[in-house]
Image (cartoon, rainbow, N blue to C red):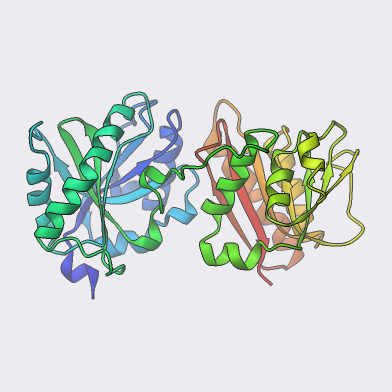
Length: 362
């Protein structure tokens, strides 16, 4: 099916992000779209919701090809706007949403009612959850929901207020797999710190399921730089990897009890492995440029094949700092003549930071 022939043009790009990072999220989208194509007022701070307006209508498939969630750092969820539905009656929000969705002139593979994960958005997320069942029921009756046809677009219903929603489209391969872009992870009982959830989310968000199966396997060897007390080390050990944990500080007993961990008291910036390893992970609290250079050196020199790492961002000019760290990594990898891929994302479990994945590709 040619999407352009079946779908209306879009008037905006809609993204959900971490509250407080709306400017960075908007800035990335405007840069990807080109300033000549956008009319984007300064986004409201701490809303977790960004809508970049387009000066002219653009075909959905054009936007879907050009703006990829995997290339964005600060967007948790992404869709391309069809328009706003306002004055939704409290007693029946489903009917006007269904009628507005008919304008898309296509059925959908999924209906995703969503709201931002912010102080203002959390009451709306409850409303969104309550509407899932009635929306799916009525869209199915209208022959507009066909969940087995995964090539069809997904319909996002993003609530900006109790009586206002923005409609948008995405494809399954260019949107988060979870509502609002937030995977729901439980804190494991044996983990020594909540940081283990950050690495667990990184595996799910930065790698697709096939990549995860191929690239992260029991029996592999990993190094954790700045490991103590061991949240990331524990996550790796639970997945069957043998881990060398590098830190001058103490490791939690539950981590060492796995039998999969060797603790080496050393400086994460100067320690080197005797042999190449499959993975290096790093969650050290340090200047982001220094971490970017360290990670790039490990991958470029062949000490590890791939790495997941965390970059702590400054209070100001955070997008500029991300671009600077990207350039540090790109320059070092280009000098090595090794093919590579770099993915950066602000995860749900990140705060004033982002998480990256860097890997050799040949």
